[in-house]
Image (cartoon, rainbow, N blue to C red; front, side):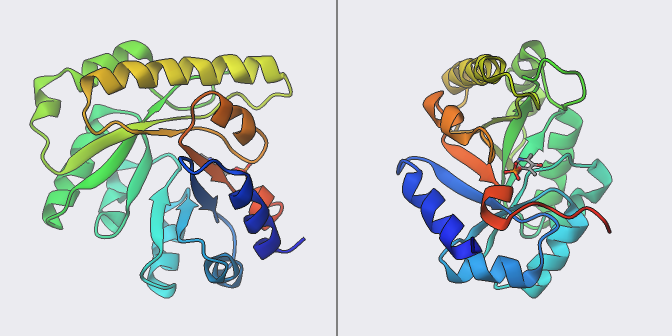
Length: 220
Ligand SMILES: *Cc1c(COP(=O)(O)O)cnc(C)c1O
């Protein structure tokens, strides 16, 4: 299967209210350009250095999303161009993004990452931490970030009912966050293996890598 065919099929299967992020981590410029030529403009990467290198070399109308865990000391490298940061999981990180965005005279859209997986290894906020951030005075003073939604990753398991439970809990957090935040319209939920279920449970943005580009090669 070609990237173009995969992409076309996936796009046709998505409802119109769902945005597709093509996850291009580890993929070459040539592979990304095939998806670009097929009309895709939003790409997701999980390493700031790799994303920046691609941003420098690929067409400037590509919309770059950071979907991975973000180290505070690296925010500065993407602050000038990143369109959406999915994995914001602390107030300290949010403050750093605000500070770097200010230097570039822009507002950076962010999603707060929630911990929904029953396994412990995944990053993210719990309900109390979410509440504490969005109701704090310090948060209200940040002018150069905008929380446009929530993101989460389900447990890596074959147990579909567990995945559904985790998606439902994220959709629930999303509803609560929407009551507090006027710009909160994006629910980033679902990857290659589970995006149909994620959409059933209310996702508005899916992050799809291997179903578009094929399996990733991490031998580098
Ligand atoms: C890699 C990655 C994806 C895409 O995973 P696939 O299973 O290849 O679709 C989605 N979200 C995040 C946060 C990722 O790191």
